[in-house]
Length: 173
Image (cartoon, rainbow, N blue to C red; front, top):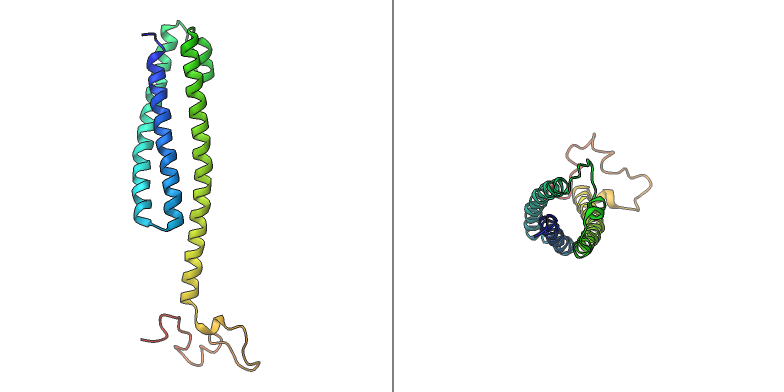
């Protein structure tokens, strides 16, 4: 086994975990569209678990890169995967790392795009909820478009008639 094999294994695990995040992102999108809050909460918990796993794998990846560079007699700081790939001597391993790097980059890009879409869906849902709350809490007279020219709106006359400016839920007991 060459010194680069542990790095290939860690990178494979990173790709796998990111693909799981992508699947969860699609499930989250469906949950946001359908409005299933319980499902959304489960997905968020699962995402948290996977993100913690990715953080551990990233630490492991950094350590394996350092070990590979030390075993190759190199000591570089702020090394990118492209730099590491240049130092790999076996063409098969170099090809494997290039493929893994491409998969990981593509998956991360898909996750970012999906997260942007999910954020927009969430913002639309919140706007709808806020609008619904606003409609339910304003008085029915505030919704009227037409009124008699000499008639005052309920809120304007509230000083003379306390309690006349009631919301929808306060109108009847």
